[in-house]
Image 1 (cartoon, rainbow, N blue to C red):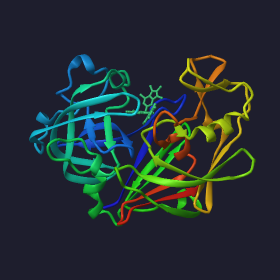
Image 2: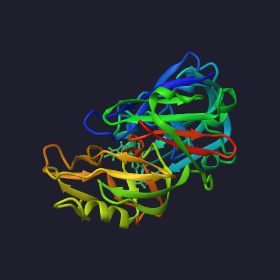
Image 3: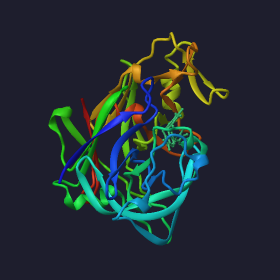
Length: 331
Ligand SMILES: Cc1c(C=O)c(-c2nnc3c4c(C[n+]5cc6c(C)n(C)c(C)c6c(Cl)n5)n(C)c(C)c4cnn23)c(C)n1C
């Protein structure tokens, strides 16, 4: 059974994150979750989350679901790249997104969430779409929704069609030809340690020359920006008057009035161009003449991350066949 679900920006002003409606349990409880190819835990705000840590989020109450079963003796604890985190217990229950149902999905209920989750009322939890090897449940790791659903899908794939300041879609089990132009270029995926890791073939700034390079990075729908090697981002921001890599603001900032070039990255023999508008990420604060860049340096991260700023410029196929591959197309 294939499916399709909306990827809704949580903030109309700039693309912080995207949430997707799901239902859990019997009778179905609807929550809006952040689908994240950069992690592999499915966790939700729940009736186990202290009230002091819940601020407007919808919660999953397993005690109100006739199909919920406690996974006794199992716990989880996860830390994300921005320092946020959560931990708790585990139930199995019916989980449906876009018409695709998994009847015994591990649903990780939060007993603790960090303040950045408490402060973001539109995100009621995450659905990890990375490889199940990254799942943090102890003592037995659990399978992701995609790994559980795969065998019921026409094809073991899901696609991401994220959009700039607009609602996009995640499709499960099929590739919608109307969502892209030209051909899809498939690249090999390195599944160790569990991210959708691929190698980009280089980059160009604006209409400048293409620089062949091997940039190993992860495709991460859960990360807002895009983090690339220092020589790449220095070459990009060097083309922008007044752009500086600011310790104070924690990254490249530039005068909001500056004209930005586009950024092109290679995918095999093809390429994807990120429009300049996507890289003008946001004003530092409402009304500020200082803007924060959507392309930042990965030098202190140890990994290159193709986050939403890059992903929303493409139609991306996450192919869970054996071996897995990742497909990129213009749109
Ligand atoms: C190595 C890494 C990341 C790896 O992933 C990363 C990052 N980038 N966006 C997100 C994340 C998001 C998306 N996200 C980004 C947000 C930003 C930029 N702002 C201002 C707010 C309020 C955000 C919210 Cl609520 N949510 N979420 C929901 C989670 C759990 C994230 C974890 N990390 N993360 C950063 C900032 N860094 C350095």
